[in-house]
Length: 257
Ligand SMILES: [Zn+2]
Ligand SMILES: [Zn+2]
Image 1 (spheres, helix red, strand yellow):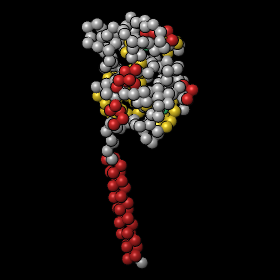
Image 2 (image 1 turned 90 degrees about the vertical axis):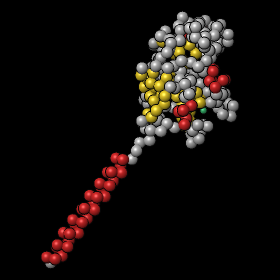
Image 3 (image 1 turned 120 degrees about the vertical axis):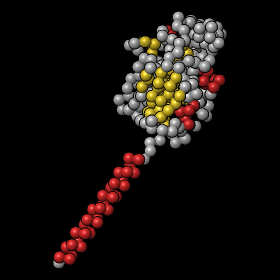
Image 4 (image 1 turned 135 degrees about the vertical axis):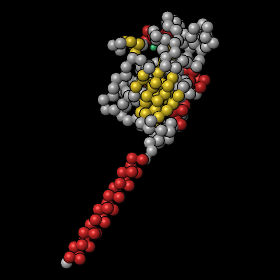
């Protein structure tokens, strides 16, 4: 009896030692699994960013927010200054606003794995996303209290952007330089702060996208060249609200100066 008890005790000690060893190993492996801070290729398409990094949860774009195309809104001494010579969005006569493009150093932080947010937070005035050339994307309003954009459209330059009163250049509608020079009508145009991508006004098969084909947030889900497994994405459209509807589809990140 005594010998059996001793053997049992030895066995128990041995088992608990193994259990401790196993759990220790488990702890070690879970805490040392490295978080990938690699930036997926799709984000590197934002060629205007001065740096693109990741902490494994978010992607961080640093930008000076200066358009890489000519504009009558650059100071006349700037090599990218060009007197207005295009046609406006909507075909109205161009009316320059009094603002001049200024550098706006910002960090745009977006989730690496965008997720739907059932509350669909409203988009604020100011930057709601970043275009491939590092320029800010703005929503469909001209000012507080959802002031209509209609009166501002005449001040869009030939690439459909303009600066606000502190010189921050931005697009509310299709960024024509990206859809016609740098990429194409169906190309990736950038990202909204919720991390979901923004595409041009056409699908890959040439179909022109209109707002009626999209949901209340101005997007829909299907496979794209950049996301062959399918993803929710916004589209620029020629008709209002142009880029975003009733708020973000997902949980937005931030823009900080
Ligand atoms: Zn504006
Ligand atoms: Zn689409």
